[in-house]
Image 1 (cartoon, rainbow, N blue to C red):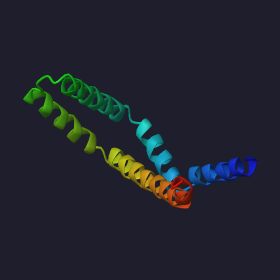
Image 2 (cartoon, rainbow, N blue to C red):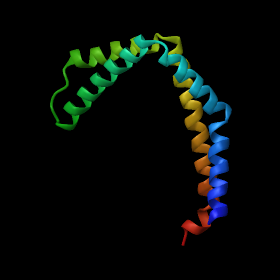
Image 3 (cartoon, one colour):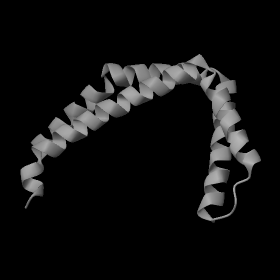
Image 4 (tube, helix red, strand yellow):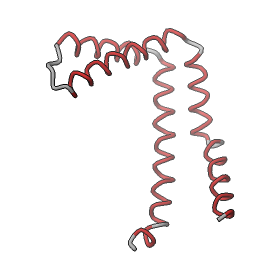
Length: 113
């Protein structure tokens, strides 16, 4: 079992040093230096949460709420660094998906049991 844990540790380290992870951390660090982006992200999340709550409670969602969410989204994507962060995040998620798919294929025989 320790060999498996050792390999998992090596994989984790390799993933954390991958170009995708490095790009994601760099984009996040750059984004964190701009408080207006954090504020816009928080406002967007709050509005999305509000709409989600209304939806889960099967309450009507006002047109104004939808418009505000769209305006907040537009504000976020107007920041170049946010677009860069989102692209880096997508690349990292894609890498993790590929790794998971590779593991799934390798374990397919065991999972059939």
